[in-house]
Image (cartoon, rainbow, N blue to C red; front, side, top):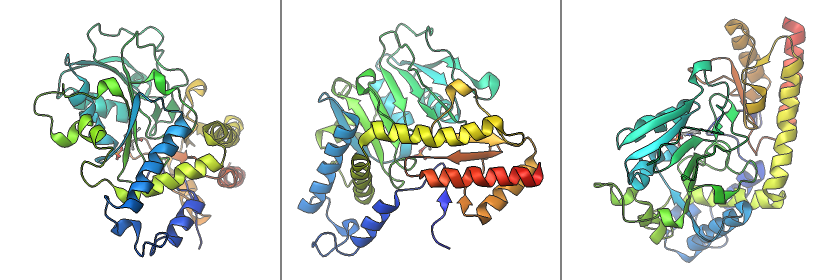
Length: 360
Ligand SMILES: *Cc1c(COP(=O)(O)O)cnc(C)c1O
């Protein structure tokens, strides 16, 4: 069997062209006689990879000069702590709880100060995004935190919250580079790259310069200060070099495909194929409110756990893999990130249609 259509939520599918190029360069990266994995992070060849990746990301996202791009480690989950450690000057922050990742970040922030849940969609199992047009923002909040795309539940903010002038911090792990964003609306944008960009082990943080200071909570380790990494261009210690190299290739792949406007329109077309099918199916149902649907993660159910299991098993036999929903949610979830081709979504919907005919 060759490559499958991999609908995993993360680590997730990567562009085949990028993997092929990496394979070709595996043993001898452009005449250096070594793999990028074997290279000093202080070498000229690596430095070029590193700086080109940053420059390409800046171009793709149109990142203004007063923002820094950092490549860090520790997964998105370490940012749950790093954000309060670096930003919670008043020890107060407001969180909007739209799923399990937002909730984890909220719980972590409670270790450092007063974290307020100012809105939540937990009352309906996180199947919608709360109205964020007039939130009870705390007057002394150091920032307002959101998880912009909820990987587990399949919702996404299509309008950003009104933070009433407070700094907006966003976890974009599962929607990173899926569409253009206005970086100027945020203080920090961050995400683990293993969902929509590259291999696990690298985290990208885009942070406004005035938020990079020495004024951090007492006891914040050197490695967990944004300033440490910003001052050293993410080369304070050994960065995740191979991961950054692959991210760089994905940035070039995105540029070749027309950038984020083009990706958005491609992603909208892909998602529409699946959602339109779900909306008319008598067997499969989407689980979230239409207005808040994610372009990247599409959860659905039959309402019958045995039928769900049968579907997942038979789909796998067809090379449609990792369609099982998150372990606490059940049902199915198709993650259709940038690197999932249109043909993969068409193959999925064709199979759903056939399965419905046979089992309906
Ligand atoms: C996967 C995910 C995380 C956790 O990422 P790790 O890199 O495993 O820590 C956090 N937030 C979101 C939105 C995610 O999808």
